[in-house]
Length: 110
DNA sequence: GATCAGGCTCTAA
DNA sequence: ATTAGAGCCTGAT
Image (tube, rainbow, N blue to C red; front, side, top):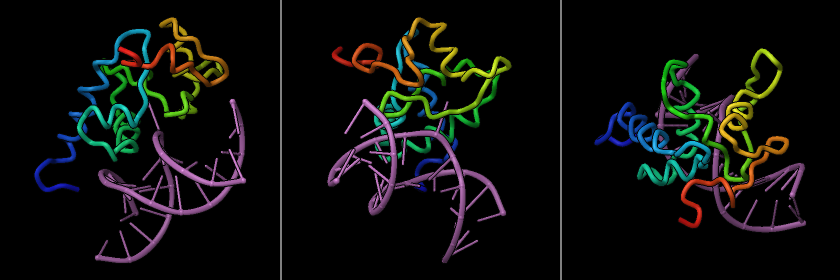
């Protein structure tokens, strides 16, 4: 890891970008990493989001993988994918575990 | 410091 | 469009 930035700082930069994703939109891990100035750290984004506090107001569910699919398999009390449920609640069309990035990806086409 | 695993991504079938 | 393999970087043994 770089000497000029603590891991906590990297996490902060990542979360700062994730917090900017607008309601009803999604972004990929790689996209987040890139926007945070950490182009190769897509997996770190996943790591950071996984270790978030549940009280956090970070919209972690708006982050999906590059294929437009949900990587997280965590389920809620209904046996449904939590991330999928949250996205649907925001009006994001999730078919199976896949999302139409052309339509819902943040900053896609402006 | 070596080794393993992870909410990834790119490329090739 | 879906599946495999290789590459990449960090955090935890």
